[in-house]
Image 1 (cartoon, helix red, strand yellow):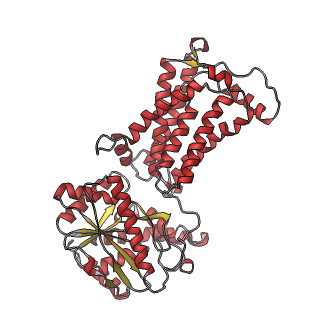
Image 2 (cartoon, helix red, strand yellow):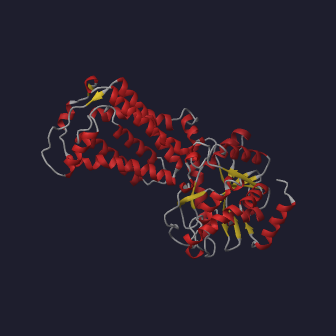
Image 3 (tube, rainbow, N blue to C red):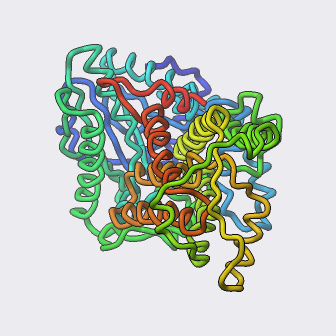
Length: 484
């Protein structure tokens, strides 16, 4: 355990004097060997009650930003007070700076391990392994903004990788212990542990252990007398639900995971972990430069005509322009959603697009292509044919094989369908959209059916680089993205 200074002991004593006494129920369920205790966050009640009253030697995972004076103001304001009435936000912004030195002192003095979302996460896992090997327990609150039940939000699952690391170090299978914190009852309830299986696939173990912990915490809570649940979200007390509710608590629009109002251009390149992922948007600049270079250097006369007999069987139909143009909306909406709510998926999608862009541009330079199937006149004259003529004017028929319309669509569907919370219905809808968008490129005579099929192996290469595994080894590209 850390050696505490006199000042920290005084602060902790004062907090304990004013904070309600918490009863720990079910301590007999704690294993004799080191384990990971996983609980509902209950806002500040979770960390505070565990620091003061949880038995045995333990270390608590905490937001690493709260351990660094310079990072406290932005994190504290965004996480605690950004939903406050507009008239009072100036006060809370000022307060976030006032508490910064005290926060850094307290979090560094307490039995905590900082958790980060950049390369410093390696330090988190390394320090956690050291504490487990020393015989201490870890306490983790892995909720995020997706609802699961009326008691607990959905868990992030990468903390379960500790078990694999622990097994490799010690040969022992780590146990995870569910914990329900009920501040209103002044109790901490400890449930039955679940043990990691080293013989099972890691993805399966993450899912099994995460689902068990969430279900067990919910079950523990529902077996208790009715009380108000302190949710993960920082919401007014009057809006908090009951542990006996039949529906998960669903707050209003969830806040973005990054406060882009704090963004300054220099922060993207100076190592600020909040905004470093925005560097990937530079891929669009590179693509457009290569696109205009290829258009300028390669005349249409030097291009190979792409055509298939099947193309002649596909009639022009301007109404397919609806699906063709929906592609633009899907690209913008997906990138924007991931930028706001899922940075990991943003990095994967943007990287997927960069890979397909680069592969396509290489093909365009090595084997220039053109299609000559556009109608010279339209049978009908309406809004769709007018818009189609406009698209024909600014989008030349060269550089068509493979179709990036198809490649991007497959990339979007792939990344969306990797999200575990996506239902099967939405997964089906994603791939239906891919099919419709791909067909639309042929019906509006922007691409040959050959362009559609050539896009598939391009996507397979991108998918392998981003998600493919060799044995148990994760792709190097994926590891690099997590460090970005």
